[in-house]
Image 1 (cartoon, rainbow, N blue to C red):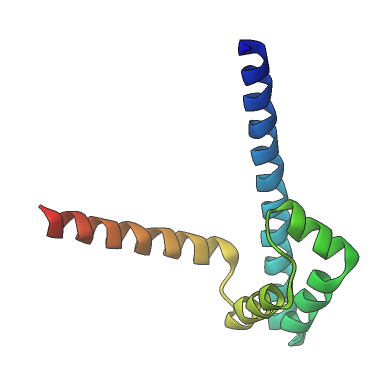
Image 2 (cartoon, one colour):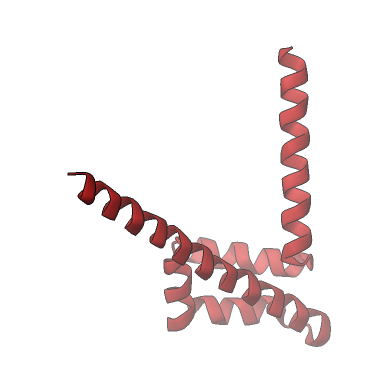
Length: 108
């Protein structure tokens, strides 16, 4: 029984690592589209074309993202804002921590 649990835990961990790897590919595609937008003005169209392509849909699915039109619209909107993913993620994380700290201070 213990052997089965260890194998299941290992497979789960492998799946999480694979999802993170594919999520990194999605972030790189967003950064490429943002760069294209700054250079050529066609970033949202580029990310939409990629997300609707067979490869793009496969990568999004492997990252745990449902490749539907709502997602494509969200990716296009993100690219049109022009904020690179590393900056957006660090800002989002710092805002999340600030909200959490304020909630904890309020509770105390």
